Amino acid sequence: MVELADILNDVNARIAAACAKAGRDPGDVEIVAVTKTHGPEVVREAWEAGLRIVGENKVQEAAWKQPQSVSGPAWHLIGHLQRNKVRAALELFSCFHSVDSVALIDRIQTIAAEIGARPSILLEVNMSGERSKSGMRPDEAPAAVERALASPNLTLEGFMTMAPFVPEDKVEETRPVFAGLRALRDRMEAQFGVSLPRLSMGMSGDYAVAVEEGATWIRLGTVLFGERPKVKPQRTVDAGDAGESGEGGGEFDRVLD
Image (cartoon, rainbow, N blue to C red):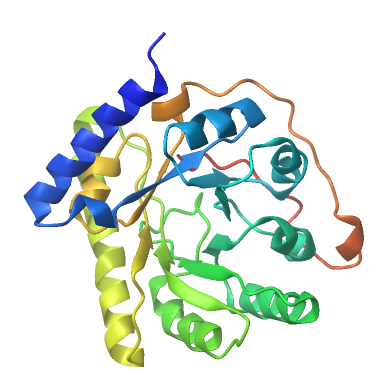
């Protein structure tokens, strides 16, 4: 069995090579360790290997896993966030990568103000135009940036996107998506006169290309921890917000690493 330390050495070497190609500092790239469907022992393994950010797709999974996990990591929500789960999510996560609408910005701000939370957020943009992916359209980003910057409890850090899933020999096809998000970020910085330093993009199959195009957070799970255990999906409603309508019919299972 290959040790996580050895895997990380290989991953970090690929990050360094991508940064050298792009003229970037490897220290500007952080790994978000995606522990979806893995247990608390994997969170500990990641922490002990030097990874400082844990990424989870679902609020209900983090709710049982986090109390049983090693203290120390920052927990980021990288999966779709329903409005009826915002209150629970604010108790668990310091950063939301997948804020995809002005309505969700407003909901997070309202609950954050009530409980005194001050989360960081990223705006998720669907740069590929695929109907199977969530995220706002690029032309919706200016209004979302404006609303986020006007929300006193929220810190807008940047943007997130997902590229199409492609075979390994066609990974270059993901480059326009990553380059497009970086260009959108640059336009928003210029338009609003703010710094938006974070770009969450790149997963296990395409992270090197994402780093070449400016990724600062890469979401890695399978490449670090292997294939996920098979688990039965669960539908839950957080009691504190049971009266709120959600986004669609329930959380859907997106692979984000």
